[in-house]
Image 1 (cartoon, one colour):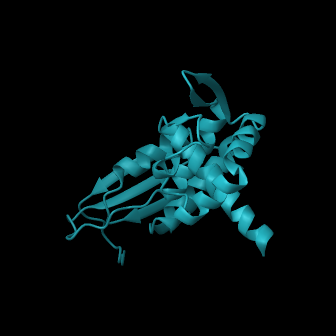
Image 2 (tube, helix red, strand yellow):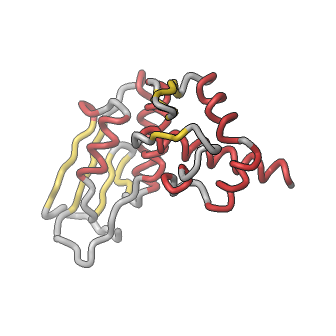
Length: 184
């Protein structure tokens, strides 16, 4: 039980640390990194205290450096953490995981149709994109055609560029789609 709790704490700390570095966090080296917990919504308050007591922050920084997700330097008694390219990709995956559509008070009368034809050499990106559309509540019309009544241009643009599939995805805003009953 204790080991399971520790794994959850480390996972939360890893995500929080990477997201914080991605947001440009600077960590004071003195006094076991005081106050950094306020930067991370992902990391629960009780977990933060446990991590500080166990020295998990330092070991997590070392592990992330070993995994080539971050680099660091000490300047003016501050620890400056930087994301590597691999670290940026990891943060991007966290941002994709948190992506959701906002439900407005009233429907604006437009359907949003997402059509894509992503080649086989980008199969993983295609599956991530398709699964994310399903997760966000899009209705599947065909294998590569999805529909929603919710505004989603920004979210689709983010996914297209983050997954490097922009040229294979089309966003259509339509007033009417004949022959279609959609409950979305």
